[in-house]
Image (cartoon, rainbow, N blue to C red; front, side, top):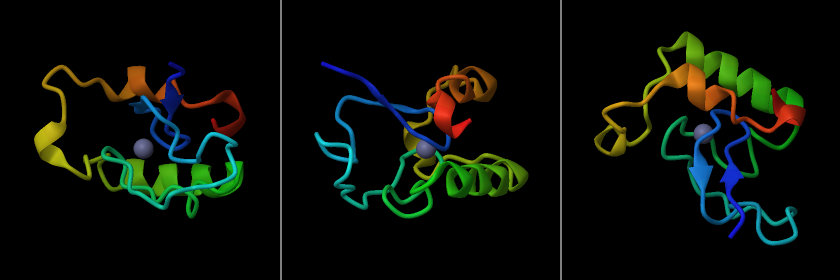
Length: 85
Ligand SMILES: [Zn+2]
C-alpha cells in the first residue's frame, strides 16, 4: 500500500484522495489542515497559499478530536511532497 501525503500539511493517508490516477480528486477535506482535495491543493502555488493561511491562523486541526497527542507540526510538514513544498 502506498501512503499518500497531504500537499498542504503532509498528513499521511492510506489512499490518495486524488484517486488511483492522481487526477480524480474526491473533494473530501483533510482531517488536519482542512484543505479540500482538488480545490486549494490543485497547484503547487495554491497549496502553498493555503498552507501559509493555515499556518498563520495557528495550524489547527480540522478535526481536533483525532489530533495525535504527540503531534509535531514541523515533522509532518517535512512529509509534504517536494513539488508542493
Ligand atoms: Zn492537510
